Image 1 (cartoon, rainbow, N blue to C red):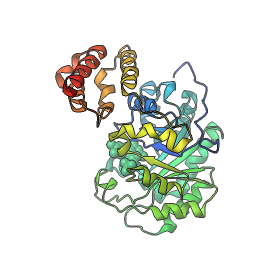
Image 2: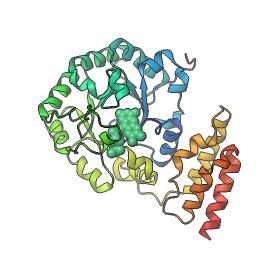
Image 3: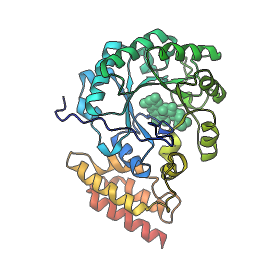
Image 4: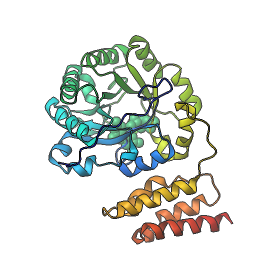
Length: 344
Ligand SMILES: Cc1cc2nc3c(=O)[nH]c(=O)nc-3n(C[C@H](O)[C@H](O)[C@H](O)COP(=O)(O)O)c2cc1C
């Protein structure tokens, strides 16, 4: 176990001065690793960031430091757990507290066949009492200072009734869960791939709005298919927060506006991409000392210069397979030269 136990830092605040879920970047397996989160934190100081889902088995029997280590600059950052056994989840929540995470989130929305075989993820929506017991066990393990939250769908399979989700949330809230992050489409567990399960079941935001009306004391965060500020603003008229996945990853510069638009920070001049690039180069150099190849970091930032002259040349230089053997200083120098040359 890690020796230096971090002090839990306070999550950033929304305009009313309370810890905020106002704008969040979604947990995404293979995408929102620590390097991606460090990059996103350079773009928004206040957005709440989530780890990829980590299973209780991987944490309890695997390399804990590999799964849990993160840079203090990433805060506020939430650990998302996959699992269903209350005692195991409680042990993992305790680890999250020791590592200094700002939140523990339980995945009740993942439809993948592997996760279904493990009887967690979205199929937990059919077992609200088990989720309630798991949340209660996690809360007992860490106390009230570390929020335990749940991310789920509006329904599973072809269950279309609002009452199914309402009863799930009502039961889980009884255990002290106060934040529900709702991907506003059903998970179809009978044959759709995880990718199709993020596209094909229709979005039904009105169910999420209704949930907030029925449980005004809970924080309700909506997720799914949100791509621009107009959509974010519309959702924020009805619920407490918005979680964005693919659009944040693919269009990261959108994050540079969030602190002003949604967290009450003064308007800033256009962000200085060169400065962000320099911070990321230094980060790559620090990570190299831990054996991390620069590409493991830069693969998340290929959209950095999107829209600027020379962006394509920069992206190609960064992702060129022959450049994988370069150290960070050399790689960033080559990409910078390629960008300037292409920009003329
Ligand atoms: C590559 C990828 C990996 C994902 N991994 C997870 C995960 O580990 N845990 C989770 O709760 N959701 C996961 N999701 C779902 C997202 O968190 C989010 O619910 C979904 O993409 C819908 O939001 P969006 O339309 O803004 O992308 C993943 C999505 C993608 C694209």
